[in-house]
Length: 286
Image 1 (cartoon, rainbow, N blue to C red):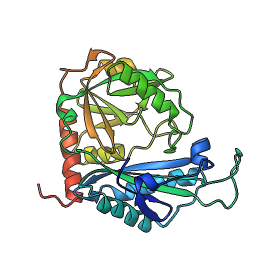
Image 2 (image 1 turned 60 degrees about the vertical axis):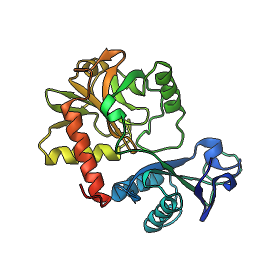
Image 3 (image 1 turned 90 degrees about the vertical axis):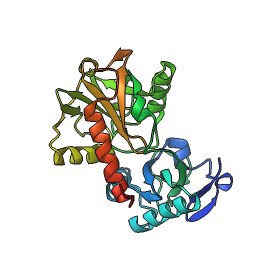
């Protein structure tokens, strides 16, 4: 690993950043994380990110390691020190260092880390070629609305998808698709976009929220309801969204071509509108 990272109030070389083996994040996965996209050295969607991160911290009774404003200053500093014109910043907060005991320790300082990475998020070639998805069993815990660092279920599902030659896995529970291993799932039928409603069963995706807002402003109908794998296979289009892929088209599910087998017009419109919004936030003239 290389670059400059943030650890508990200090900026340092990645190789010098060390966390105790007694940190509860290491022992229990007792912590939360976030990933924010960066375009033109600018963090996108700051308010929705702070809101979701704050909610995850609150649900696990974790304290903010600093104020929200200071947190944003820290992220901007990571971007500057690592010269990230386009990419993202990952950050996490754990309950900190304590003797190994399942119950929460008292008055333990949290551990806060952050690092940045470069990635081509605007001109992602997958937006033109499309991606393959396979369905996998959803074996995760029941509080998926919390952005927990305990991601073993997602790792298993992603590896299953990878071994089948797919980019992403769509997780299935009780006969319905919940979400992707690291993304929100959408299908399109007769011009209507379908995505699962918010609950403890899925993460409240920030891109999901923004895409629904964008669609409503442009009279594109989105219906929030569960859908089955068979409905996905019969869809005219399918796509996903996440922090550093924005919106990507799905051209194949479980080996079956979706629609024409090429990125569809509804996906293209949604991606174009989101990128236009992102570039506007980043101060890039179209």
